[in-house]
Length: 179
Image 1 (cartoon, rainbow, N blue to C red):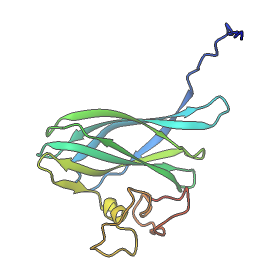
Image 2 (image 1 turned 90 degrees about the vertical axis):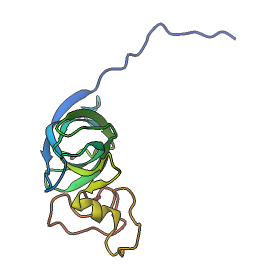
Image 3 (image 1 turned 180 degrees about the horizontal axis):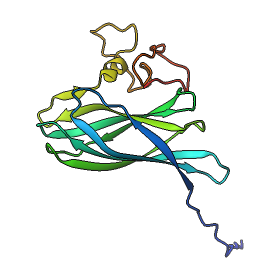
């Protein structure tokens, strides 16, 4: 049997990158402050989004050392509708007053995304205790769950990103996840 190899090699090209606007949603008592955030959407050769590259610089503004931080990012369309969410953890220690930088790549980006909203979802202190966003309570306990329930699926159910939105059903239709 004879095998022929082509001398042509198809080179992988880098995707086109488009800047996406960010909006940080601060919360009272949060031990973390976003210093800088950038989002760049990867666009394939057909003009469709493939992923978002997220870069966040943040500072520990508390007087206690942190063991890790988890951010929640929401992909938002022109009408302000949530088109998907992404949890972005960073498990590196951070002393009071110190700054960390981290990058993530979130796939499954809705093509209608025009804005990425960012909030600190939870922060773990070095002593093992946690600070949690008010939204974390809604995520951990789907609407209708009692306080004894462990509930939750890691972030697909919960109220809209901004305060004032109504909570969706416990199992929202695909693409309508709350933040």
